[in-house]
Length: 171
Image 1 (tube, rainbow, N blue to C red):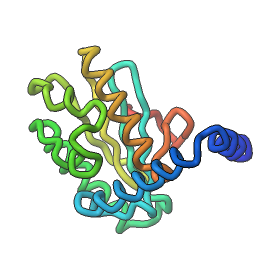
Image 2 (image 1 turned 90 degrees about the vertical axis):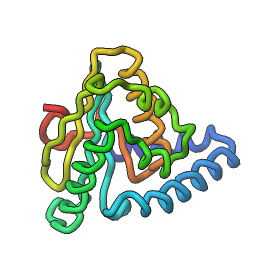
Image 3 (image 1 turned 120 degrees about the horizontal axis):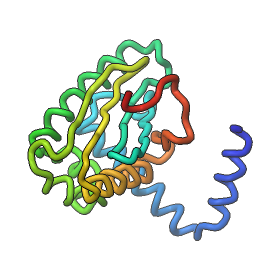
């Protein structure tokens, strides 16, 4: 499986123009640098996992070494904090890290209180936020927002549909 993923990545990179690859790498470096202002944990010691669902999706952040109690504690505190900020309509963290024009962010800013439910839970080595809404516009915004984070965080993030970390996201 790992060999297949590496081959696919090489094939994809071969089809991309060199300037596009350089631009992605530069953007990812800029995002990582701005992320230090918001995220208290190490990006290199953790992985962001985004799983889209029909009602929204799940955002997990876990320590690459699940026994790393320091990173786990920092991840949990951060996700609890951003959950509360998001429920209050405050998306300044993602805006600072990814920019005000981050895909999906405008729609998320316009969400009415209670329009998106956000549940927090501890998981092995980190934490998860599960986003749920019955509004198709908000589901699409969450999906665009997840895609933008996957792109911006590069190797520090992954699509949850390609990752199995024990239990099902959002449950």
